[in-house]
Amino acid sequence: MATETKSKVPNQEQIINGFNQLRNQQRQIVMKISEITDERKEHQMVYETLKDTEKDRACFRMVGGVLVKLTVGEVVPSLQNTIEQMGKLLDIFIDG
Image (tube, rainbow, N blue to C red; front, top):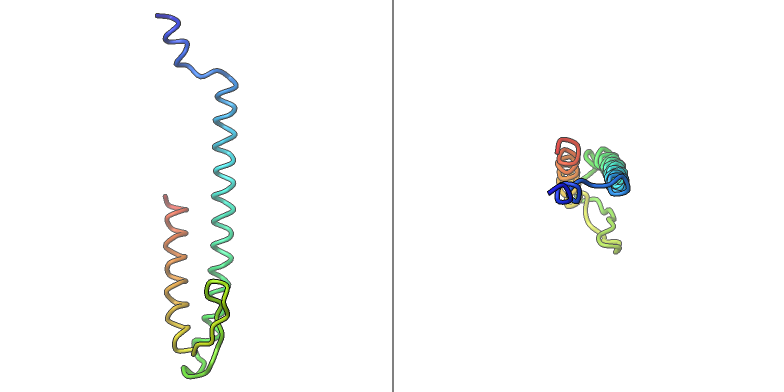
């Protein structure tokens, strides 16, 4: 019975490996939060620039690696939505 209990208890190497995995996951999460925060700030800056611009004025947006010509009126609502979605995603990452 003592061997059964002993086999269930992780050894020092397993504990260290588990800790290192958790630390790596934490670093990846922090990096992703930083990346999303930076992207959100960039989107916010573009939104602030375009929100008072004429709605029928042409502008360009990168969509899936392709530069697309749209109007400000088409881009601004999409920017607002993207900013909101990024905020919700950050809330999930931060608040859990």
